Amino acid sequence: MSHDAVPSAASKSPQKSATKSPRHRARELALQGIYQWRITGGDGAAIEKQIHAEKNLGRYDKELFSGLLLGALGRHSDIESLIAPHLDRPLNELSPVEFAVLLLGTFELFQHSEVPYKVVINEAVELAKTFGGTDGHKYVNGVLDKLAAQLRGPEFAGRGKA
Image (tube, rainbow, N blue to C red; front, side, top):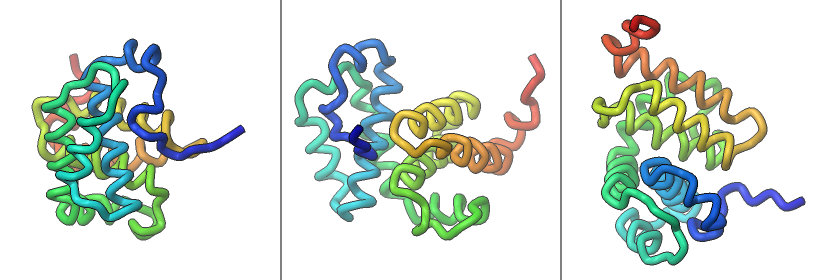
């Protein structure tokens, strides 16, 4: 059994990606772009262009993908400084997948207040389950939950009330 941490954007079967929402697929592709950037140190715009050019990506929200990828990479220093206090180890010791999921999720919490924090965390947990290690999603959930309290105070304080 082979364990590829993050497969290329096109390696997901078209059938499987057809059942995913275009927004979820955009997050998957943004995650893969961040992962690629983390591993290769490449240019965000070049990674964006490369992913857009791939075939068989399935339906995805191109605007959301580009905004998440370029936004997270463009603000990575700010985002890393938000994440670091909530970790139990240095950022450079996170797996590349955990790093990418946390960067993406934190960027979305930080910059996309129109997306409910519960949706952001759920999407990040799903990405960590799909691409990460066995219990990586639990770690991601814990860190993003702390960040939601910090970044989305009023919304977070109102949780459970409906």
